[in-house]
Amino acid sequence: MAINFSDLITINRKWVDKEFNHHFTKEINDKLKVRIYSIKPSGTLITSLSLANTLLDILPYYFKSKQEIDKQIQREISKTINDYTTATEIDHNEEVTKIIFTRTYREAKQFFKKKSVDSKSGKYGELLLFGLVESVLNCKMIAHKITNLTNYHDEVKGGDGIFMGNYTLPNGEVERAYLIGESKIWKDYSGAKDDALKSINRFYDSKVQADFNTLEFFIAQKDIEKVVGNKVDIDELYDRLDPKSDLFKKQIAVHPILIMYETSGYDELMKKAQNSDELSKLIDSTIQLKANNTLKSIGKKVKTFPELEKVFLDFILIPTNSISNFNDTMDNLI
Image 1 (tube, rainbow, N blue to C red):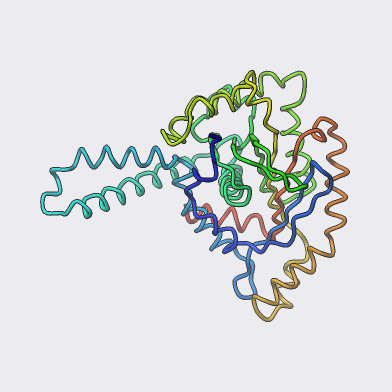
Image 2 (cartoon, rainbow, N blue to C red; image 1 turned 90 degrees about the horizontal axis):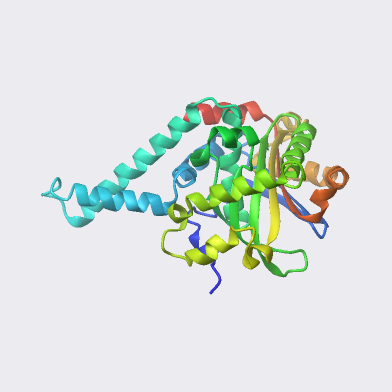
């Protein structure tokens, strides 16, 4: 029986609808899709406070899988069974669960506070990519940079997350897929788009393709049992991560590309709007007005990467008024 990766997702997938307005999802061609979201206004302002808090809520499940957290909880319950002599079993379990989640959150925060070559905003992008791919595309993350940062991996610069699941094609059919994502939180949209495509293209550059793919799938295999536990057919999962297997070859490659970027004009819209509903409508009108140009520019840029026209690219665009506001808010809360 084929693995249903959607069943392995543990985050609340409704968070996207609470934090973002979805403006459209359009196919440029059979392999290229674009989705555009914007941060929901708070009154007549666009702020990152609610979004940042929500991302921190899902941070523990990004840093460690539910399987790992559950095992830690069970170990701690066994270790402390005699320390809660006056507590009921339920109280004991709840207290230990709270302790483990707090500890996991604290460990994750410490990682995010450390400067890296990719900078903290790069880590925030990876966290946002995780939440969006699991929620919007219904695919389970099975490997990411946090637990796999080695000197070699830093040097090669692999993907920002490896996901597995089923991907819906433009014709409505569903195919088994592996997804390797890329995230950019930049002020400059054009530069972010170009850099993201260059990063993805390295998976198909004959000079480094073998090293890239071998490393990515090795990383995914290395800790896979921590991610899925004993809930799935582990042999099937390893086959889906083995480029030599028939099952792997039957999958399609999908690359979710998240770009959050600054766009001009939002300050004027905030000055004009009388309430959050009006601001949402003004932002939607602006995005719809630019939609054709946005789609054309992406299609044109992808054509400069011939190998990328052969695989599935799924752009998730989030135009906003201030990238520094998002980064600063995350920095302050974390």
